Image (tube, rainbow, N blue to C red; front, side, top):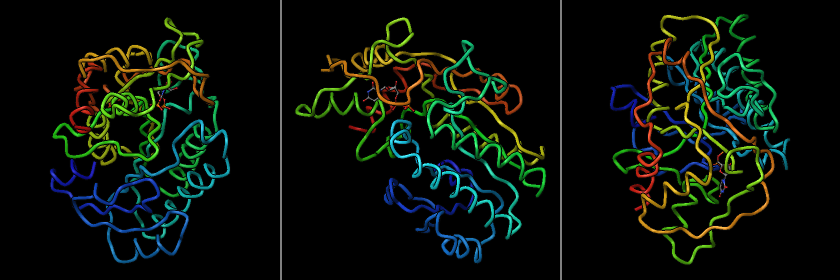
Length: 306
Ligand code: UDP
């Protein structure tokens, strides 16, 4: 996102505690190391700078970890966001774009999920994102805060120029794990978490959306906030459901060889199917994903890994 904003001529400041982020990835604009749970860090950040808008990406974001350690999630995500919004309010910064998640919906009751779909998270991670959306709704009414929450489905892929990509330790996400297994010949085989889900091949179905398409939704949201007051929500996804086994098959085609894998037990907190209906984003933000083929998305990650 910072790369894209810098290319468009914006001055960007990145604030991160580097608990899971990588300092090397911030190659554009200023970097400030700090923590949303430390109000002194936030005071200093806002004291010396003028901000037009805040994009908030940081969070604890692993559904299964949130089941095992919910306190960590409520503190980091809910308290962290509350602190950030308070710091913004004190300095009169009133535009905010929030990274929400498909996890707010829980197990879907419709084939694809639009903004009105019932919200019933099945893990604390989704619960924290839903609580924050409610906080934004109330704050926007009371304090003239203008917000867009982008509920993205599965962010995937890497920078198309191969300069940036997912780099977590340990890595938990499906596509990087598949490709690491392919790349590192001695790595333990890939685990597929459960094949007894209520889906055509028994593995979970997700909507994989390219990271650059998601960043484009943020650019659209900046313009949207110039014209629209209040708190707004958009579901951001390709609208195509792809199973874990289908992702594995596509990755094998990209890599050109078989990738060793084993079927294990389910992971905690995974819903069967999550597929977006992004009609509202298409109509109101003018957003349209460029990457619609899973093989193309996987290729950008393979390019980055190599
Ligand atoms: N998954 C898997 N093996 C892995 C990582 C993930 O089978 O090594 C499955 C996971 O259970 C889920 C899907 O792949 O059904 C996508 O998981 P990921 O962690 O990439 O994203 P999430 O859906 O949790 O945001």
